[in-house]
Length: 247
Image 1 (spheres, rainbow, N blue to C red):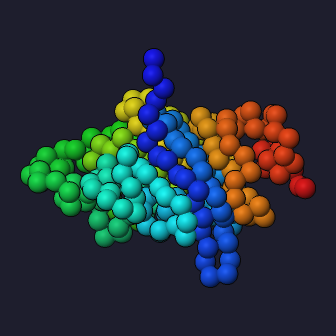
Image 2 (cartoon, helix red, strand yellow):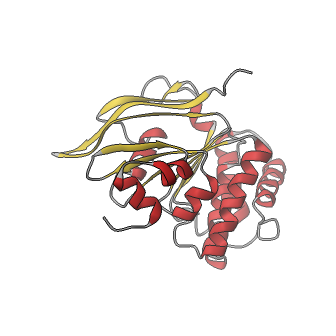
């Protein structure tokens, strides 16, 4: 059996703001069907790297390919084939959950309103919000907002989804439920997930592989299965992160 195809390829990516180097020479790939986590302590550049992968911030050096498209060259229609959940969900407060999920369909398809609504209700059902379609973001909990944002990211049936800090600010039970949702969606839809997080419990629960950035090293200090890194890494910084130890 052939190995899964790489759907994200990041080569020698460096980001410099003024005289400050955030990270340099970051290289990795993500295979189809993986849950791949970008992790590390605060300020190491996790969200900056995510912005570069999805085409929002051109790297100072290096290149990024997503679903075979050059994100800073001729990228074609790749943006309609990925889904993104931003930090805090970024739902539009004046729209119901149904309207939020319908928005990508309105922007990128010619489907009639009834079909768009039906698809949006299906996506809300996938994330456990089938009975909440007519609520506004202000009327739901933080965990529900994250789920609604994932439903919106799923609207166009993308094979690849990016989630930025999906469990940040959630209680442990809600966070665990969101972790299970990610795994269920991966298994049910066959989608690939790239997740940015520093939440240790979530990393160990969902990640097939991870890359660890370090602020002091200005780049990558580890890559692999997080459970193996926790138990066998020879790097004190990696062990400290996974074991919640102070260096």
